[in-house]
Structure formats: C-alpha cells, structure tokens
Picture 1 (cartoon, helix red, strand yellow):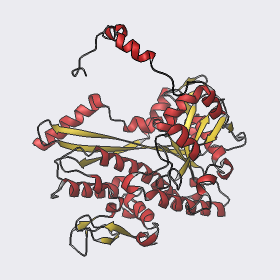
Picture 2: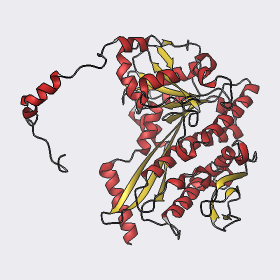
Picture 3: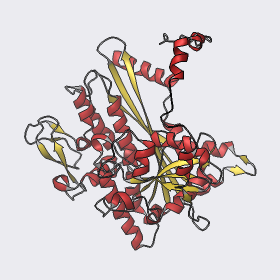
Length: 462
C-alpha cells in the first residue's frame, strides 16, 4: 500500500506482465461460467411495460428529505475523541414554482436560487467517542440525552410553542402502534423494551415534556430510548454506526412527521403532495420495529383519504447507491425504455445478493415497508424506486409473493410520472427534489469537515 499522498509509478505493472509465473497461472484459469449476454437478456424479459400515465395528475407540491453526517476528530492522541454532526435537509415547493423555472429554452437562475433559499436544514451535534455532554456520566448517556433533545427541539416543531407538533410526538404516535406487549394504543404513552440503566423490561414513558425516571432504578429515561440507538454507542471508539442509524431514522421520521402535520390541517393538501426520501423504504438495526408502525400509520391515513375519495399518500424512496443500484448499472444497457420490474425475492437472491441465504419469511420481512421497483424512463434514465406496501401489516396470506404485484399499487402510475417529470441530468439517475435536499445537507470532507474539526476543537479547548 502507498504512503499517504504517494502516487504509484506509471510502469510498476510491467514486471507483473513479464512474470512467467503469472503467465502460467493465467493459462491454467478457466471460466466457471463463461460470461455472455444470455443472463442479462433473461433478466430483461422479466420487465414489463409501464402503466399508462397520460391522464395521471401531477402532485400539487413536493416534500423531499435527505440527511448527512460527519464525525469530527478532536485530537489525534489516545483515547480517540470525536463529536458527531447529523444534518437533516427538508425541501418543500409547490409544483407551479418548479414549472416556472424555465423561460423558453433557458432556466432562470434567479428562480432556481429562490427555490433553494426556500429550503432548509437542521444540524444536530451529538457526543461521540470520549465526549460526555450536559453532565452525563458516560458517552452513552450523553448520546441518549442529545437524541432526546434533538427530537423535542423547537426546530422540529411545526408550531414553535406547541410541543405536541415536535418529532418526539410523532415518535409517540408510531411507538404506541407497536404490536404485542409494547403497544399501548395511546399516542401519549409508549413502553421501552427495557431501561438502559438497570435493564428492567417494559418501562412506561409519557409525552409530558418533563424529566422521567425508571421506577426500578431511578435512572433517567427518555422517549427516544425506544429507538434503541444507545445500544450501538461505544465509549472510546468511533460511533459513526450509531450516528448513521440516527440519520436514517430521522429521514423516515421526518416523512411521517410531515404527513401527520398535513393530516391534521388539510387532508386535501396531503392527497396532492408527493414525499421523496433518499434510500429504500426500510428501517434497519435496533430501530427496525419502526417499519411496521409506519405501515400501520400510512394505512390509517389512506383509509381517511379513501373516505373522501382522495388519492393515497405518495411516498417515493430513491436509491442512488447500494447493491440494487450496482446491479441496475450492469443490466441497464439491456433494458428497453419505458420498462418496469417489481423486484421479486427469488430474483434478488439470485442476481443481487447471491451470497445471502434466502429468508424463509421473505426479503425485508423485518425492515422494509415498501416495494422496490426498477424503472427505465422513456429518456433512458434508470431508477430504483420504492413505493409503500398497500397493506396495514405483513400478516397477509402469501405476502412475500403478492407484494410484487404492480396491480396492487394504485399510486404506481402517479409515482412513475412524478419520477419521470423530475428526472435530472445533474447527477446520474437523479431527481431534482432529492438533488436539492442533498445539496442542503452534504458535508464535504474538504473544506467542510476541516472547518467542523477546528470549530469543535476550539470550543472544547475554551
């Protein structure tokens, strides 16, 4: 391996080329399966044509959510000392504002700038390795307290003086819908699976805004402890994994937070809004239980909309990277424009994750709340997009088979039309709302990361 900053020689490969042992080795190699276009053509045959979208109405407004994180190293000496920053971006714009960006053949730069100015982001600093916060006796307990403050922060409230419009209350709405003994059915009451201090099970927590304590050990407990993010926190090592989990949870929570707000003030506006998020419609790790609560919540909202003859809530998850996106890049040239495929479990385990043992309950049984589709537009852009499952739960007969039936997704034509409408050449297979949200959240390593390092170190030294 080279030293940091060292470049490799331009002719360093020549001795390998001339090496007779290498030549002998290569002559003894054979294909296990000779590469051909046969598999790709068989894959392409699975794709069907997209449903008609000519008469489908575009949404009235767009909301897009994206997150990013940076873990700042404070000192190169031991023990490793770090502070984490999680940034959440939210973009909202009416469709007519987007349509008005062009004037003739050109884009009006002033209107684009105004569209960006109307977007916003929130940054949440969190203690990481070897950092305690607000008098906490450990990194883990400081991390728990910081997460709790982040979710109840005034910046996450739709109405500044009303705590029940915060992200924390949205979490209560989801946690109360858990199945089994942890479900309370009361949006002001949730149960922790156990106390982080004494490990006593089923601790009651209420949406009061006041400090609460475990009745068994007296240790402070927080509503956000139900996410179990604290279980992944280390005292003297990088906590990038826990920060990543928190960022992903924030992205999904914020989508439901927006839906909850619109549900309370205007079902009509909710029915004409499309929500974009970056990544699959899935929640991983210790917070994976959220995905079932999200399914149930969306089904309740859709039932209300159906009573008013309104369209279902449209949430679209777009995957820019990952195994599915890598797979699509391999088969892209074999796919015809205007083609669509709902990824089946058998296909996924054969072509996308062949090293994984197939789950007997179906792929994503413990994490996914939406179905992945591969969609190639008329212009040739290929997207991996997720649409929420059209069920209240997965307790449906043959769920892992019927979930891939495109006919069950009534909002699919609208989703396809929206994605095609917003496709952008700014980045590979990008859509404008996600690109705007990402622009507001991305933290560059140079110079952004360096600035955060200096800011954090200076504050600690002071």
